[in-house]
Length: 228
Image (cartoon, rainbow, N blue to C red):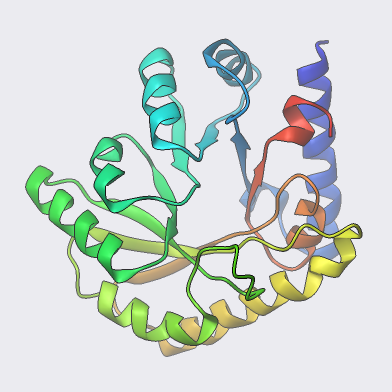
């Protein structure tokens, strides 16, 4: 068994354990392996090991790797997306995790209409309020969803957040809990054409806490690829 396979299995075991603590079904949790630090060969190895979702955070890197990987795998774009680069994702990514402003939504709508290709997106929320992070203020999300719900080619599938990098992962719990509560509140409003199926939260250092707080999509790179 390769080191990569061992680490992948270890992560899945921890996902199962964390899901059990929160009473959730681990089969409902999507693992997105973040491959920004590795090349095509490692991505192919991950796919051979059963990985079904690959995440990249730079458009230039994504396009190169997309062309080099012919296997049937779902690609996720997880980084900040500049509007002028959105065209390179058309028809290639299953989910954009970082819809964070109306100008980007309008550009995706324009591209979608031009190519008859919808974009599935998660709305990025800056729950922690850190100036270094992108995302909407939680108070802005409802109105943003109402605006985007009127578009034909931008389909909201959930919410995403990034917690601060804390020495103690437990200190991130309040961020994940806040996003879960926001999602629950928004679901009660029932905005037409908005599907809040996914809560994308949790990375290598804090995914177990995120899952305990209701995450059903985690973005893990270094813990699988490098064991840290």
